[in-house]
Length: 197
Image: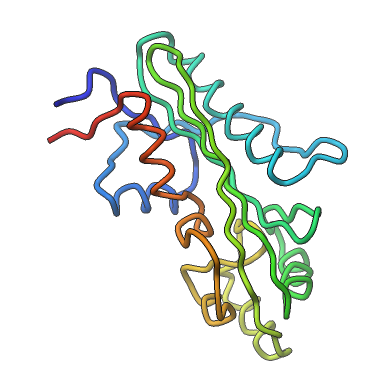
């Protein structure tokens, strides 16, 4: 059965697009939402990612108009306790993240939100527990020099060199990359989206 409406990915993340393509979901368009992503005072990580994902989906759905498309949006953060570690924008921020995560467990939260053409909506938060080994100074220096940390929540990419730092995870691996695939597909199908044959 062919969809009557296209799928729009409301994200600038190449990792989310790659994950979707990996399971045969090819968005017809990618539209980058303009949403204020500043956490609210005392906002917890789970509430934060849900709010931002829903805001992204709502913004693009409103711009597209009723009946136009399915809109998929997501937001991912690394949380150390109640502290939200956003995207590392410079080497100093990445180093702070790595030193904070070294030798500890942390949580990765992703909020996923879908808006259907008829304006029905669904959203969910997925959490994965990640354990970092204790990092030595040469490992930290080499990872920072790699530049892989750029624009990554918590200053690392599990799908890259940082996987060597992670002896164990509990939960969805794709969630740590930026999009929990099983949950995402469940939300899309629940609102009537079907892949093209």
